[in-house]
Length: 75
Image 1 (cartoon, helix red, strand yellow):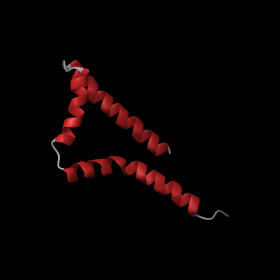
Image 2: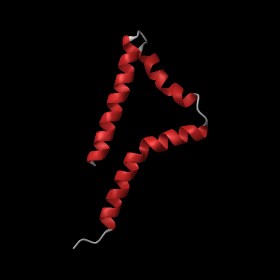
Image 3: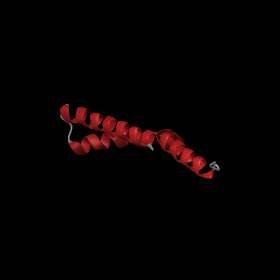
């Protein structure tokens, strides 16, 4: 779970930095948030799915690791 927490913190910091740079350049908050969505608007469905899967990989690995640990017999 530490890895998932670190991943989420870094993702939030990155998104915050993107929004902050847009705000400093004079873009409104709504325009800045809209620019985050534009990346998905210009992509095909398959490309959007790949971006979501790659963004979710750390969470998937953490859940799979926890599931594997709960299935393994303890001595």
